Image (cartoon, rainbow, N blue to C red; front, side, top):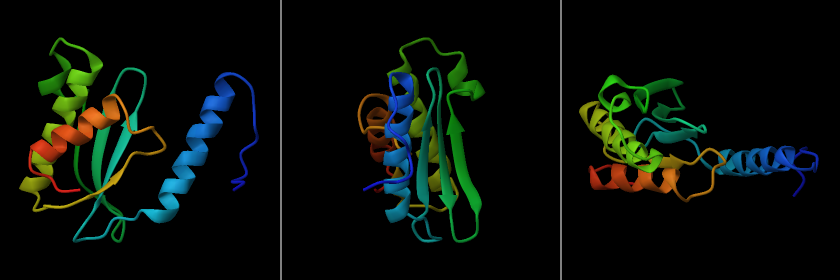
Length: 127
């Protein structure tokens, strides 16, 4: 199960584990026109979610915690992730997408990533 990422110490070890998870996930997941991929990108401060059709290479819908409607809102990062999930689901449904494949991008399915996914499901997007 070697993916060409060397074992390291400290913070580099976390980045290596993230890279291994990301490669393992992307081997199995691909978005199509009928069922595009919901990509989640998480930084220390912000969340970005995109609905991507990999067959065409186009982004169908996107939302970010940097959007004007979300940026000014006070609250925890998990609360903003929930708002991003609801917003991306709303924009995807407006673009005609009903069902997606969830790509957590090497992140563990916990915390803000799980909050975004749950909010997107509640807004009517099917995984």
